[in-house]
Picture 1 (cartoon, rainbow, N blue to C red):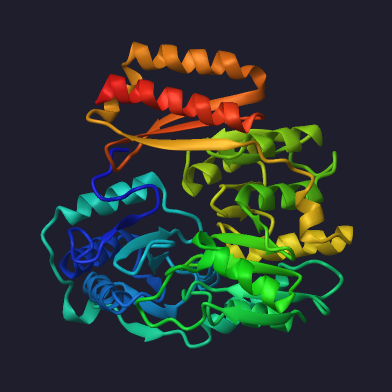
Picture 2 (picture 1 turned 45 degrees about the horizontal axis):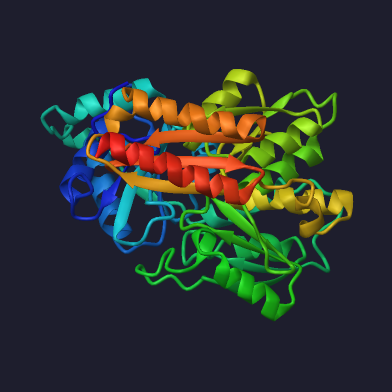
Length: 445
């Protein structure tokens, strides 16, 4: 589908710049309501993260949806995966999240979940985009939707998260530091881990509308690492602004990224009789993840970058676990979408099942050195047509042999080509990446 507004994860941009404006979001609410009201009046849930513009867009969506004849339930600040869960449990037609995930407060976006807590089908997104081109018309007054607030949403989701922790032992004796990125997990995550018995220190839990993801959370785990060392904690857990990503830190302050967390979860659950055969990563997943899984008899497949594509590949193959290096991890035996809190609980369950610390568990996977260079170009679409670039890539791949990997990828939003080289020898990888980036620059500037 050729999308005019929808990207791989909803609609996102800078607040005040089209389409992230109140008038567009009002129309988007109406268009969404029009599509779903055709299936019966129904209802739509709206949740948001903690950025200041969320109030403005929440009001706009509420007005648009109700003007199309759809009832609205407001959840307030809640993690993105919580909206997915609550959409299912409340039997709503859809769930809408107002969030720009790991981006700064100046950005915002609108994400959608279907009635079963997964991303909307392409056909539904296409119908919403088509409705955006229609004239705005309010339904008759007796059909206008009603709005109400769900006051126990946080408690419901906390109990759900706790229910996914299947270990026989609770978390007593475990000292954890949480970094909530001043985002949507700030009033959820501490309760989950405390109620499971852990001793919890929390940072990044004082949102003011402007500090979400500001030098904290999963995109800046250095603050968490310092706090883990200062508190002499067993480990640290960092979420992003909307709670669908997670990074962890071991007791020594070393960061454990999404590839390593996915390895820990999948390898701890795998047996030859598990009923699933493999794990899905992305084109950017470290080669060390693939090698470590295959050494244990676990198949590995790569999808395009984006959790939407990881999910599609999991469903296509009938597998359960997948994720991205960024910490967006999907555990379909626990929930329907990527969930930072639930993913971290799966890691803690693996620690308890194997009676090992986080550093020992991640030692089963050795990350390959990886160099990434962004090359600014005049014609990013020329990447596929250039014989000079293809020849340069072939030469690098020949030098790496079966001990490395090359990826050239045009950015979807900027005039950039991303050059990634990965292999066992870090110095060689850096040299080859620089060489290949220069070939791209010569061919496309």
